[in-house]
Image 1 (cartoon, rainbow, N blue to C red):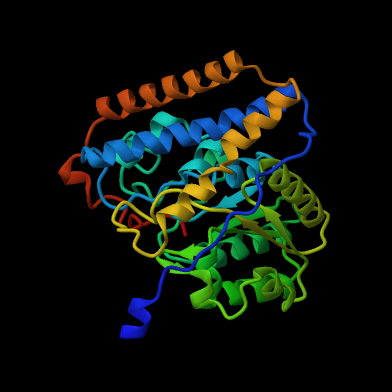
Image 2: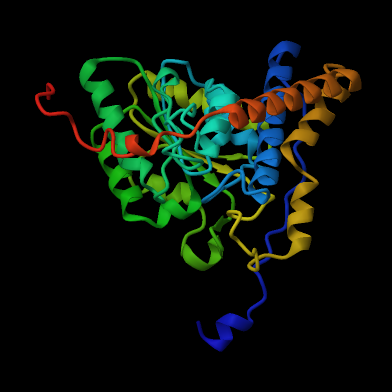
Length: 347
């Protein structure tokens, strides 16, 4: 890095006005959306605490601030659809239906986890809920999603494959290869870009010559829509319409959810690339408290109801930690199991 580059002030990304307007959902569904965002927030806060206590080891990437994207988009899918995620996938797994205790046990490295403790935080997988894994490689899930979608098209199903990835993945070759093939073959893929403005520690202005990511999708003759990723209503409505379009056989679609993470990229990140004032400004339009305010203004939520939802989330987290703490480590002699297909096994 040159002296000129090193002396540059952090790129400033001012937060837009907070979400507003009516919530077009009945009370039960609106509270379900809120409850899921609270469940993710409390899980991630506890995960950060446990990481500091060395209960969770390795890498840990938190979803705090981005909850509206995962909750709003995943509630627009059916349980039969496929989901491919990134290493910031705890919230996706939870909303898809993974038991929080199993999720926590996986982060602990216990064999009661979804991958017997072998995947950890970045590699959550659950065939029952059709969550086809978090992926530690930036952009690594994109080709997998295209393969899943190709299989669905060949089998004549109506499944949508939703692929979540960050803005940093847009700079990877796998993104362009995946977009090109999906468009060329008209595959049922819903590309969901979680644009939090920073690819690890680099502002989008510094690594993308074109920061309107929808333009990149349009270059593949693919419909593209940008939505406010801090507004769960905007996310859900965009994802619902896009999923319906893809499901009807019209080929892939690209959604750019413009969001912001409140925590560092990972627990190892010193976060020297953005101003603290910028983070605090974005927190004023956090998805949980702005949605809560809108529901209260419409008479769909009372303070005691909010407190009850939050208390339930905390109880679920406490139970999950207890489950993980009581879990067991895999025997050392089993660590080489499943590395190879047993001899004589059917192909």
